[in-house]
View 1 (cartoon, rainbow over the protein chains, first blue to last red):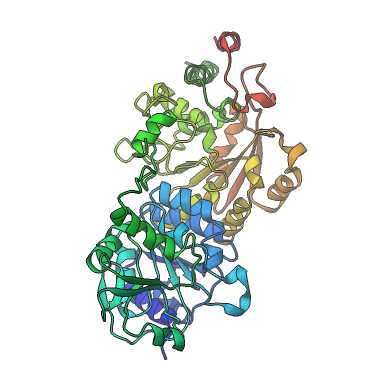
View 2 (cartoon, chains in turn blue, brown):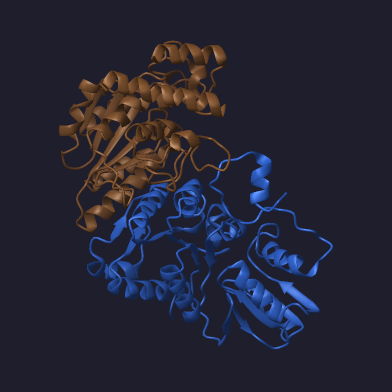
Amino acid sequence: MEDIRDIFFESLIDKAKKNKKIVLISVDMGSKIINDNLNHIKNRYFNVGVSESNAISFAAGLSNRGYIPFVYGISTFIFNRPRAQIRHDSIIGNNPINIIGSGNGLTYPQDGPSHHSIDDFMALSSLPNSTLAIPINEISVKKTIKNCLLSKKTNFIKLDKGQIFQQNYAYDNGFLYSLKNNKKWIITSGFQNFNKKFSQKYKDYSIGILVITDAKENERFIKKHLYKFTDLVIHDETFTYGGLYSYISTILALKLFKNIKNSTMRNQFIQLKNNRNELRKLYNAS
Amino acid sequence: MNDVSSLKNIRKKIIESVYYAKKGHLGGSLSSVEIIYYLFKNKIVDLCKKTGRSKNTFILSKGHASLALVAVLSFFKKNKNDILKFNKDNSLVGNNCSELVTGFEFHTGSLGHGVGLGSGVAMAKAISNKSGNTIVLISDGELHEGSVNEGILFAEQHKLNLTIIIDNNEQICEGFTNKINNTTKYLNFLKNEFNSLVINGNNLSQLKKINKFIKKKGLKIIIANTIKGKGISFMEKEIRWHHSVPNDMEYNLAIKELT
């Protein structure tokens, strides 16, 4: 049985052996695959100890000098505690880094809400020039790592725990999907966690699993497959407000609900100084 | 122009910029002037025209003192009249500057980021066998940020070629640092347990000690004792000048003191 984390780190180490710009930064987080390969990444692996904020600033400094850092920690810690460092040093400062969080949704069911990564979906998928990836099999791991190495974006990666999906899914614009019925869809992210009763009830539904968030790409998938849905179930281990439900609903509303006029800010930070009205114009929100 | 005149000239530009823009951070900019001036005058930090970078990297972690750096760069003709654009409409030059402005390697202004960023730059130099120091200027109030502690421990552990200069002007936005959240014991800890140097950061002859000190290996900490609002008598050690704008009378008085 192969764990998704092992698949991801095997693939990453494989790339790091050849690409000497890849640097791995652990926030005191172990990985057997990394530990077994330390001799291949000499001088490019750092355990910074229990210090998430420093890990992100340190990674942004390395990125500024041409390196491709991957920072690894527990999801709820590495995405929440250094929020300011992610925002300022990496995103606004245009120093792309890759942040890997262990845990997605209820990956750590016994550890309580401090470890439940259920509230961060929108926070991680709404920052400009960034993506959130939740790979669940080899195809999505490959897509995610390719994205990390080539996109020049800050990438958030959430890794679940457990056996990878062997089922054959096709990949299209950020989604893995299995087509059964083009009017009825279940949309989810990460591991499915469908129980028997749920699977039985929706057995003739198509399944779409969001594995990489990129609003434009995801829009294309939804336009192609979901615009004519008659029945849509959004099933996920994220909060209703600010989770997958909000994300999918926003894309659908922007395209389908013409009576909801959008006069909000586009996702971009602006460096120019000016008065509030002028900045609103620049943000397309006047 | 001698140093005294040069420093007065720089301070004059700082006062003018805030007066005309009607916004800016005077106190922390004025306390840092000698430190930044010394680094650039003696080419410890020397920006390459082509890349905009220096062999010894300088990171202004106390980003709200951007005006001091912009004014010093303007004095040494290293930027394209950026001082005239300070806080003007559609300008990139303002209270906090990003890497899009000459002399700024990173977007700072949220305190507590510079030591970690500097560690990244220093480590990048180390693993790619490049020489050069990395110098980070932080404020004493910035010591309240836990991330500074994280960065110092990491830089010490990895013997990074990193110099942290603490502009110890003893004030933060709302009052005196030690009355709000006392840093004295932490400064003593840094002084006693790390490779450290304590100087008067507003005194050029004491700043000369930097030359030899930063050539030492590993992490170095300079505690530069300064005066907030330095150079304008009625602004020195006065809390309101953290980010107050001088009125006409105060502006004229300040300019008179600098002329």
